[in-house]
Every structure is written in structure tokens, then in C-alpha cells.
Length: 371
Ligand SMILES: Cc1ncc(COP(=O)(O)O)c(C=O)c1O
Image (cartoon, rainbow, N blue to C red; front, side, top):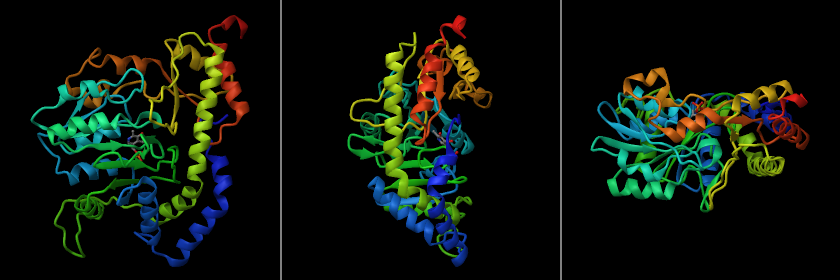
């Protein structure tokens, strides 16, 4: 069994992928060719915002968003310690300080009740994450941000395609950021990402920073990076995007089937993912919690089933952030979730048979004598 079944997806998309690649080879505009603009228009319409700017990764999108907001040395950006390293890495790369807020015990996303206490006069932005595919509580976060005049960037690398009270992830605050890393819900075939906003001036800055801060040929008013999305990547994403609504539906069916199977199997101590009322999840990962995580993982492995402890070590305990001075105990919900998390095989193409095998292996895990 695969942890993420990319091969079935490629088999399904192969014809349209090859046609799209062929078209790029024919026109030969490999850098910012017409497919980049076409993808940007399609994705902006899907999310329901004015602007989408395609970029080289879901890390560079976050970096460019912070650069466009002018964030740098001495500034603070409030985010969560329970996320992939990119979210806080980009803050530190600009010389600013990531300020962590603990996660909500049910959704595992930023806990808005703890947000206000983390805001200081140095805070310049709030950067919540839609962990495992469910958007954070953006209304609550936006309301607090508005009171303090702060911009909100939604790190939707995992939640692209999910909804929050009828609106799509990436269109829920001033800036939305996503990733097209192959394992992501709208996975590409290499690295890629995109920024979303309704703000004309910001989108223009994103476009300039993406090309070395260039406003027009040989004129660079801003400091920038090489952050472009490849034409070939955009072309393949256009092919993949045709199937995306169907893949979102499949992911949700698979998530619901895991829920049902695991609920009725009564694995002791198991916590299933909680999707808040008014939200959907695209299950970038289907992640459960268990105090017996390591034993469950060993049992899955013995049954030939891959699983991953995303994210076993939270960011405040990562050596690279040692200078922030955090210690164990600082973010108790994050630490409990990190010590218990286990992500199960997930993609739009997990078969019912494979799901039954996963549930069966997990429900036997507390009975080693039956091995
Ligand atoms: C929450 C989160 N933020 C940012 C990223 C960075 O995306 P990328 O790998 O495209 O740089 C990822 C994906 O790895 C992620 O899961």
C-alpha cells in the first residue's frame, strides 16, 4: 500500500498531461508562458478572489507575502508551532521573530482564544495554518486582526479546496498561500505554489517580487527573488485542475469512510479528526491521535501499511528555533498532539479495501497476542 497514491492519479491524468506538455514544447515559452496566466485565472475564479500569482513553491509564496508586507528585522509574526517548518522558517529568514500560539484541542489549528495575548506592538502579521486540510477559524482570527490593524496570511498549503462557511480556503483573509507540492490536495509534478488576494496593490507587489523586484525591464524598485512558477508546471497543473473538484469529493468520501470504520472499530484511546461546524476538510492528511501512537505505527508497519507521525516534533522544540528560548511545556496542546499524531494512507485514490485493511490493523493494535 502507498502512503500517497500518486501513480493512480497520473494514470488518470496521463492523456491530458501529455497534451498540455506537448503544447508547451510547441510554443517554447518555458518562463512565464501563457499557461501560468491561464492557471492563475482559473484558480482565482475557483477561490473567488481577484488575483492569483503562481510561484515556485508554497514556501516562496509565504516569503513573498511577508516581503510584500514589508516585514523584516525587529518585527513579529504570530503563527502556530504545529505546522510544517516553512511557516515559521520564512519569518526567521527575513530577520523577524515567529511568535507561537498554541493550537485548539479539537481542530489542531490556531486557537483564537489565545491569539490576542500574543500580539505586541512589534506584531506585523498573523499567519494561521489549515492543518491537515481544514481551514483555521478565520472569522475569529480576522476579527482580532482587524482590532489591531494587522494583516492575516492564511497558510493554506494543506487546505486548498476546503470551505469555511461557504467560502473557499485561500480567499478567507487579506492573503491566501498554497503549495502544489505533489502530495498536496492540488498536487503538481514538482514544486510550485500560489498567492491569492483581492488587493490590487499587493498582487502587483507579489508579481514584482516574484521576478527580482522588477516593475519593467531593467527597473527594480523592490528587493525580490526568483520565485516564478514554471510554465511546464502550470501546464500540468491545468490538466490536474480539471479533475480537482472530483478529487476533493473523493478525499471527503475517503475521510468519511475512515471516520465510520474507526468509530465502529472502537480502538481504545483513539481520537479522530474533528471538522468544525461550517467547515470542510480536504484531508491533505487523515491524522488520528493515540497515546499508543508508536505501538499503532508498528502494528501498521507489520501489516505492510505505511504511516507517518506528522508532526512529531513541534517547531518550538526544533533546534533551529532554539534561540527563541522555548522549552517543553510551553505549548501543551501542540505537544500532546505531536506526541500522539499518526497520519494514515491518504489521497483521492485510497481503495475501500485498503481502508478496511488500515482499520483492521489499527483495531488489533491493542491486542498483540493475536498477532
Ligand atoms: C503548512 C505548510 N506550509 C507550507 C508548506 C510549504 O510548501 P512547499 O513544500 O511547496 O514549499 C507546506 C508543504 O510542505 C505546508 O504543509
